Image (spheres, protein in one colour):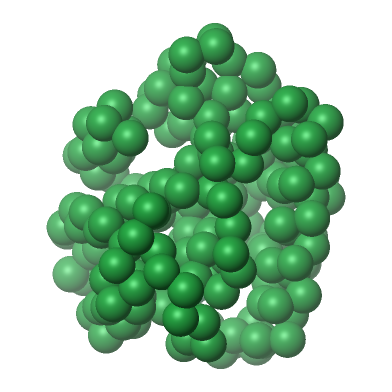
Length: 199
Ligand code: MLT
């Protein structure tokens, strides 16, 4: 997969960035550098194309997810994460996912459905993809999520379902409520930064 790697300071966080639909490996850089200016960054470009827009898995219309593609692309992404991490000497449990929208959705899916060493995730405007086949505990993982009451893409049910899926598996979940639809606001980035400083 196409990716960008930027080595940070030894004590900086290790942030693994996953963009939203139509983004690329550069889309989350500014936010990530604001979250921790000393961070090491690894950012992937989704390999699925939808009308010229990059995504991490296929869909057949808004929120009509292609679950075969979701599983294949999750495996593909995990393979790439493992191989780059080994190459760059970063252990998997050091990474913190930072995903937005489609990128947040695949991050949550990987942590719910695969036993991954990655422990923490910052998810901007994620939703449940409706897949829930595993039972292993997430008690060693912490999630920060932003949820907007007037998000035109993520319904209250879909975000609540994800929160429920995480909490029932004993993950630590911090929720930031926002009011600006599906967009990432400065206020939520500041809240994420504060959370990150403790994780
Ligand atoms: C998805 O396709 O993962 C969600 O609808 C969010 C998005 O539009 O990227």
